[in-house]
Structure formats: structure tokens, C-alpha cells
Length: 255
Ligand SMILES: Cc1cc2nc3c(=O)[nH]c(=O)nc-3n(C[C@H](O)[C@H](O)[C@H](O)COP(=O)(O)O)c2cc1C
Image 1 (cartoon, rainbow, N blue to C red):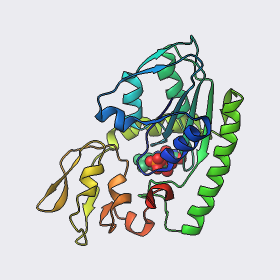
Image 2 (cartoon, protein in one colour):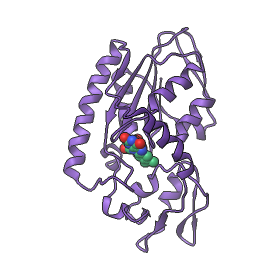
Image 3 (cartoon, helix red, strand yellow):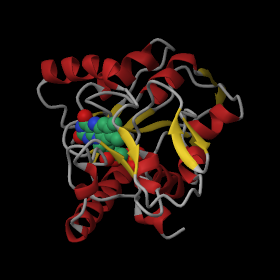
Image 4 (cartoon, helix red, strand yellow):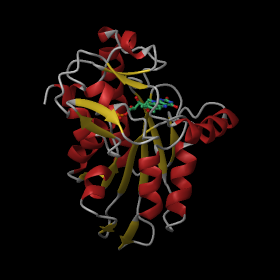
């Protein structure tokens, strides 16, 4: 079983590549959440894959909350459990936090793999260079081929996880909790009122009022799904995102 969280398709793409390679099922934790599903069973010999993006040098809150309340019933005493982290630069504390969450359920994390992908944190990073995006995405696919081969042989240890300086990761992630404000979001007059942003917000922080998105929560998951998926790029977050472009993994952009 593969459990994944993805806002803009990078991590979904990786989870589905693994599922295809092993004839496994990839379960979106957002779908599981909306179905009220918290309990999962692993049959004898079945592996557990956790596939997640990095948010501010740590686990996205949606994934850490999910792992905290996850109930796992396993036929084997110690199933093979692996983690795949997608990130733009450094994954910080994602491996250590996931290992701790699984350990609390009696499951040791056997292996962790990193995949560098297009960085969707566009208040800082620029995704407007399509050539670069394609290069990064091709390299990510090669990295996923290597991960498939490693999982097949039940590899252990950390591979291309790029944690960065440990203290920086811990401090950045701790400070992020107080920075999840929805205040920097705004809508441009080009908005067509389609409501896709409200429909796809994983924490229902957006409501359509008079045909325009309005942020109705003080904080959100900061996934930027609203910004990247807007068909007319009318949603912005602070002063820089307009110039930095939008990114949705080509698997979903062409769907
Ligand atoms: C709120 C937010 C914070 C992020 N923080 C980091 C980070 O600390 N380090 C990093 O390397 N990438 C970071 N990223 C980039 C994502 O981890 C990366 O683009 C990931 O592949 C996105 O996955 P998705 O398309 O499945 O949602 C961040 C992205 C977002 C939206």
C-alpha cells in the first residue's frame, strides 16, 4: 500500500509510478480523509510506502496529522516500510518526523528516498522557465526508476534525501507553524469565478462570495493548489508569485 499527499501533482506522479511498478494501490490521504478512512490493513508480505512533499523543511501538516491518527493493522511483525520525499532543495526533518510517527505505531522505517522536483513554493522560487521544469522533471523520473529498483531489493538507509543543515531544518519547520496565514493571498480582477480554487482547497479555507474566492480561515495548509491550478492565474500570494509562474505536474495538467 502506498499512502501519499500531493497538492500540485509531483508527489502523486511519483506515488503512481511506484504503484504501477509493483501493482500496488496508491491512496491519496485527502481521499481517505474525505471518506473518513483512518484504518488500513497490510496483508502478509505487503509493503508500506509513504510518499510526501516537503513543506518548510518538514512534513506538510496534512501528512503529519494523518500519520498521527493513522491506524495500521499489519499481518507481518515488521513490514518493509519506505518513504519517498519530493522536494525542491532540501527535505529537512521529513525523514526523521516520518520515522518517529511510524515508530510510534511499531513500524520501523527501513528506507528513505529523495526526489528533487519543481519547487512549488513560488513566493520564493521561480517556475516560469519551462525548459528548466522539463529538465528537472525528466531527472526526477530517472530518480524514480532508481527508487523502484531499490524498493524491489528491499534496500535500507537514506538515499538522496538532502536534509540540509539539521538545525536550520528544525528551526524553519517550527517557525512555519506560525506562518500559515491566509493574509498574503489576493485575487486579481481577471478572476472568472469558476470556483476551482474553493473546490480543490484541501482544508476548505476558500469560499466563493459574489462569484469571487474569499479566504474564510485565518490559516491554511499553504499548499498553493489554488494559485497553481487557477485557469487564469488570478490568485496570488504576496508580491512575487505573479512573476514566478504556475506549476502543475504534466500528468495532471494534461488530464
Ligand atoms: C508550502 C510549501 C513549502 C515548501 N517547502 C519546501 C522546503 O522546505 N524544501 C524544499 O525542498 N521544497 C519545498 N517545497 C516544494 C515542494 O516540496 C515540492 O515542490 C513538491 O514536489 C510539491 O509536491 P506536490 O506537487 O505533490 O504538491 C515547498 C512547497 C510548498 C507549497
